[in-house]
Length: 246
Ligand code: BGC
Image 1 (cartoon, rainbow, N blue to C red):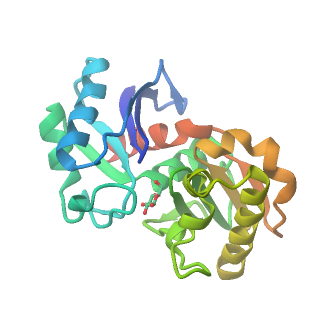
Image 2: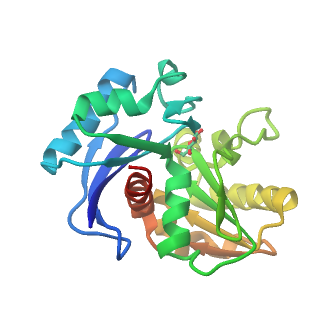
């Protein structure tokens, strides 16, 4: 069976048809830049453009970059603050005329990695961190997700969220080298390790494609691996979420 998954990010909105038996994209990805300001009206139009591109009718899964409870956005770190309290299912569903099922983007990516990627058969505590404009997190214990953990918002030394110090968004904004960024990111992982004692860290998001370039700077007791599904994990997880909740 094929379901449309859409990964809504702060810089791009990406969709693809997903084969859920295989946990793979069944065709090309289509991406539109996230409008700025990233308001509900502007983002709904971009979301609907993706659904139209695939000429799709059916349940649509959506990974969304905020705390999501019962389809409602409860935070807005890298999107317009008018999203807070907005029913994402209704706004996107009205725009694309399909039922939309919404979950946090990092939770979606985590579920896909646990099912089809590097987290397969992993027991114990697994922490997936997506590295992009912000830092997303998905926490699993014996394969069960504890949703909306938001560990990119751990308060850091400067009193701001950790994602403002060591996401890839922060790296470009602060104009720091990848080497300096990787040292910062390692410090962040060590802090998470102190708090959660994970058995495994999985690194996802856009930056995970460059894992080979920075892996030697990461040193935790827990194993650290790049996401197998790379940046497609969010799309695949979103499609699974729709399929299971339709
Ligand atoms: C948001 C999270 C999201 C992450 C990655 C953070 O700023 O608060 O909900 O998972 O960015 O997009």
